[in-house]
Length: 120
Image (tube, rainbow, N blue to C red; front, side, top):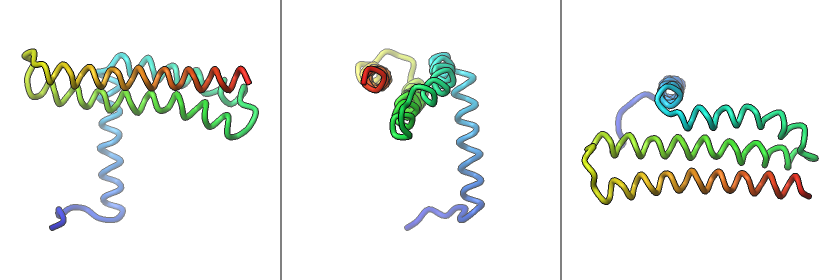
């Protein structure tokens, strides 16, 4: 049975409000997100300037944008783990480490995309 709730434009507006609240919380509480957002804003004009085609520009922008997305998901995992308990637990540590690894992989992927496009 479907969960009752808002539909149509009301649902879109509510979802937008929750997304905005999430981004505000991310900005307020996560220094890594602020640093990566600044990296994104700095890289944006360079991506537009250095990309030779629309596809290259899109890849340069998307690769850094993915870092922001992965960082947001990592922060959500950390928030849930911290909500459950601040006591050290092997699975909690593993969950946080895996989230951190995902961010590192996104950063490496972005660096590789930039290096491949700019060296070619």
